[in-house]
Length: 262
Image (cartoon, rainbow, N blue to C red; front, side):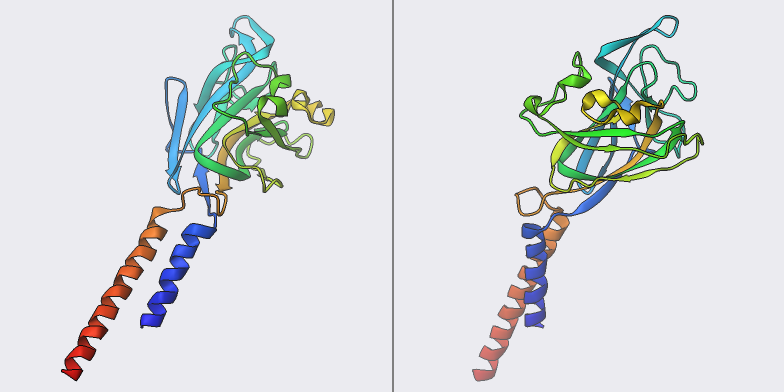
């Protein structure tokens, strides 16, 4: 029994010290918006907030297309769809309530409580096409989105271009669900940008042929291993608890041997 407890305790504590762990966040339910910031359900002990920006400017009555990003509204329309974006010149009708690149470019900034590698994105609603640009902020401090253009998202400004995703052209069904998997397993950040595709971020112009309309339903990611990123506290408590139990067993065995030799 003592040997078994030693093995279990060591395994639990090694898990805390040496390995990352993966989790996912639902953007479909459990999200609430206040003062322009959308807070979604914490997962794996890591919080998640979302903010929207768009280069679509003006009003619904007089829409214009600008070159600089300004704050927009994160929107949810029922369950099973996910988060979209409504700019100042859009209403809440379909497909305007999506994150799109029609009459400007919409993006969503995801801020996680700890640095993660964003491993996959689930789209709950797509229309016409569903191309995406994904970037991570690896600079110092907090990234600035407002008043910046697509050309501002450069390495010199602290941005890492992670991946562009291209779906089959002409995916016109509003019930399409596309899963994109990040091939970059080395970039970790607490700030991630997911945008309707725009080659101005630095990608190929082939994705600009059709307007893209998408909603973000679920994102998944993992923490970095062996770097001091906090692991789940429950695992640490298991290791500590097992060590305490091991000490108790040892004390009891010592007392029993003393009684037999008395």
